[in-house]
Length: 237
Ligand SMILES: NC(=O)c1ccc[n+]([C@@H]2O[C@H](COP(=O)([O-])OP(=O)(O)OC[C@H]3O[C@@H](n4cnc5c(N)ncnc54)[C@H](OP(=O)(O)O)[C@@H]3O)[C@@H](O)[C@H]2O)c1
Image 1 (tube, rainbow, N blue to C red):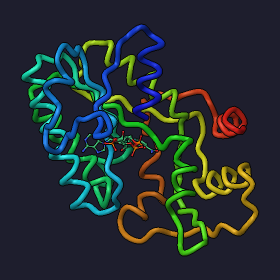
Image 2 (image 1 turned 30 degrees about the vertical axis):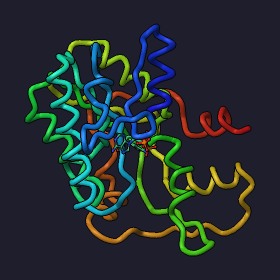
Image 3 (image 1 turned 120 degrees about the vertical axis):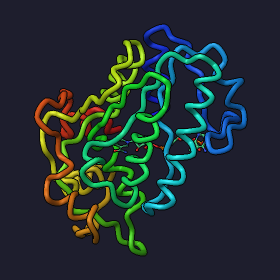
Image 4 (image 1 turned 180 degrees about the vertical axis):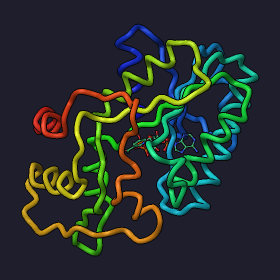
């Protein structure tokens, strides 16, 4: 998402500065932060930690968010835009516990803010294919989702960073509901995978929320336009 946001920002004539450990900025320690934020008008936070554990996720998003907001305050940054996920308030479990902690830290902070709660990206199918494995077997978690193209999310994040802070949430999903199992299988098939990909029900409260529709968009959510099928065709090389 960071790459898509940077591309979109440049296309609109902005000069994005990338904050990542690979560019010398660590949001958990604050190393390199003041230099990177010098002169910034707005910050779009799409940092992430790869964990399913609630404590690890909460520790990362809590620390990184508070460190980033403190740096923004020192630098006089006018707007903080963060990317969250649809339904984290209704299912603050496992990884989502950290995303909700991120939202709470932003609400409690003093930098004017807008939070975009997005549905799963179409690219999520590829991420799941790469990471949800049991030995050599790829797995497809059962989930009701209304996914959206990553580039539509990036465009909305840049819109929000260009606009006055709302002090509130914007919800964004794709044009139609999909099954994550179908998405993973179709992505894998389009990339030449021919083996069996079993559907699995993830345990626990987050797994239940994924299956029962809790994470689908609510009334009033904005909807993007590119379907998963169209995205699959566009990105197939
Ligand atoms: N995937 C989805 O379907 C989905 C849906 C809705 C919302 N989201 C949200 O979108 C956001 C981005 O997701 P993504 O899939 O693009 O994540 P990603 O590919 O894992 O990228 C995470 C980025 O965070 C940086 N980062 C990690 N630790 C850092 C640290 N300590 N200091 C500074 N930078 C750090 C990484 O760069 P370095 O490694 O170089 O530090 C990397 O650029 C996440 O917050 C996620 O919750 C995702």
